[in-house]
Image (tube, rainbow, N blue to C red; front, side):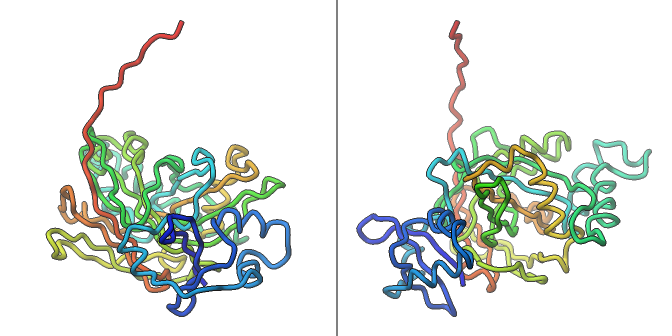
Length: 331
């Protein structure tokens, strides 16, 4: 079962459940966050709570998407309490593009290996620990908070100062921190971890800057375990035609880290275990149009699909006008 959030025809929030291609209203539900909070205090979890509440009218999921009424599959009443984070160099093959980007500026010809390749090898050797939990630390980054989330179908803004506007097709884990400060996994979703690869290429220490961009995830939240093998398609549409298309792989069969290891190294920090907070943690990718020389333009449409996650995630890209920042004194 997958869950969606949307606005109904009256502009009211609602939740839908998708099962075997049929989408129906979840009775009495206006947000996945509220459902998840309620599930913390009962037996059976989120899926059981949805079943107990019951399902109502059948919905036209495609119409909701086409009319721009789809929301991200989870949000927080206070967007500052939704964390967007991620890990990189986690997938088999993911080091090749990054290594090529960083070699020129790193002196790797003299030292033999870039820091990128060293980090990737660390994951290969220690990212899947025998005890199933704690292995080597992955690369980690902060992306933003709930204010950085773009709903499915809506434009992803690229700042006026950005040097690139590139997609990253990924799987995101979605978590709620319970009353005891422990992360509770709600499920997984498709994600576009939108980044600025030209800025990153200047110097790998600019990675943090390159990740501070908007992103999108959804449209559906897949309830249950992550499939071991995920094989989707990432596309860029321009003027009604496919400009670029490539498969992307994910799931632990295609990764150098276990999901449990990536989760441990994120949630080991007290900061990320505050009761009531939501975390959307992106697990990385090995597929980028940037690696194939694609430079996106305004109104290009990103499309990420994988049948196990329901409807595709589509978002156009929009370039914003840079506004001057004036820092004034208050003393």
